[in-house]
Image 1 (cartoon, rainbow, N blue to C red):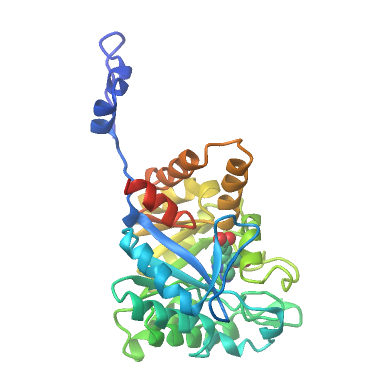
Image 2: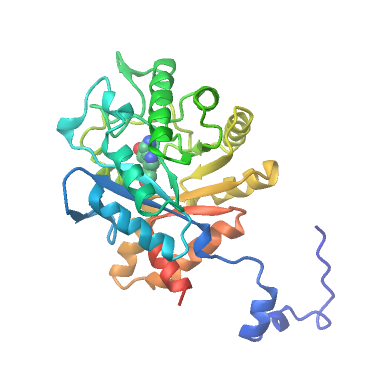
Length: 332
Ligand code: PBG
């Protein structure tokens, strides 16, 4: 692109900003509820909706309440919901067997959502951290997060989710080789239509803190995730990993976190043109909510501005805890 700008005063760029009508005419991007994937937390029990303290406005819900929440989201125009399980410390084991149990709380939530709103796209998270005694995304052997054995477990997890009715699988574990292994297993088991939205460029970020509270992983986690998640200093590496996951059969890719990594979003979209999503993670959400609660920022305005930033950076959509609130605002 080679923009042509006449010299002043022939060009007065402010002409294009003079009124709401003219600004609407020249606006380059829009945010609509169909851009959102809504992450939700589910837990065991009945009739419980409990707030997550570090994420004001976000709830953990029991499975019996998740269908109604999904219905409400779909009626607001939100096309997809992403299920995350909360697990107590006692439910966690070293072998993580609950991860591929067809009746674990995440799989029951998938079925409950599909029963209540068959039209909504249900996305999942694939990683062992909600089930692992030490809070890691993979098995830990002699202090090391092992790759290949973890991939075998993740494949079992993927199949259990697909069988429960999930249409979009979200591997967030950052093990090597998992996308190809999952794609082959899905094909072999007759799940040709199940999509993979790979957390391909997932950084070793400290912005995940509130999420780890929400899923009960904060207390469990020993050490950090630096041997599998990407160094925040690297963007070429993120591009290589996106390419690798697309080649292994990912249908869509994700950059995570979102706002601190918008440069990566833009590079990914420009380089591959694939369906590209960003995850506006828990820490980003918590920062904006905390500032709004203190009266330091206008909550609604920064919410909408932050969501627009993802579209401007080339994203096709965004996983955001703001989804219902932003959709309500957009729907007037
Ligand atoms: C787990 C997972 C994490 C998030 C999504 N899936 C946390 C982590 O990797 O520790 C973070 C989401 C958020 O912060 O909102 N594999």
